Image (cartoon, rainbow, N blue to C red; front, side):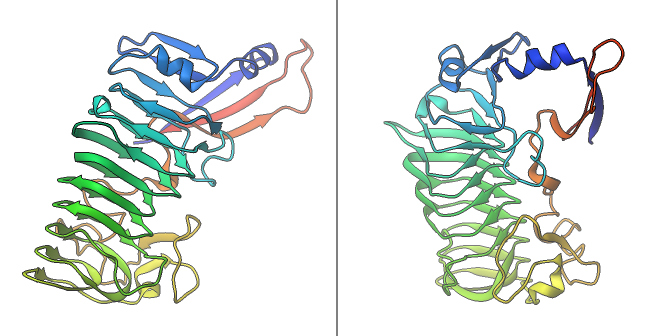
Length: 323
């Protein structure tokens, strides 16, 4: 449920805020401290703390604490006021297990690394231009509402819900993929899907055959899986332009955040998921959040008066929503 707030700031308050560093470290008891750099906030953090990042370019970080880092989002359309949060890369170590990242645009690689197994981490509403790389043995990753390119490395026993995949995989398998979109902008005939995995209610951008072994395919769209000992049930084929409200120009179809990937009422994908909701990212237990807005309060509208009032005050009008 979205909550809407209207906030009126006086001019002197606005000036003070505009000069204040905007990286917030929030303790479990609500105690909040503002820092000028992500490194300073991280150095002062402890397990279970939250770090909130502003829009704009933020330095990379090595993470070896169980903390939660939340940015301003990656979708340009919904981050016009705050700007999106952009980071080159994160290095995530085993002692960060149990933490999470959300609302960040990574233009380089994000790497899970270090000695030992990384057991448990959540990735939400992030965009990865580069590779998500698992150098360390990693299990129990939960990924929701992300845009991924290539995913490589020693990842197993993990869960991918309502994501957009535009690259290929080279991971260990034993994963679950539900209600996601697969684009494969390489336009090859093989998505190189992880083996020993479960695929349900996903939509692929074209009827391609992929080699995948020992996996369970149920209720997918435009997927022809070849390989050993696969179980395939209730899969259908349907043209992209007949599935979505606005998939963009094609074929070939390219993923674009400006397109509308909600399923048409006339599509065979409508209300035909295994749970009675739509196939694709707007169905399932975790339907896609419009605009990929992160869970922290998000400014989506700003209006500044053209002049001060009789008291020398300038009114600034913000609208904020949360998901």
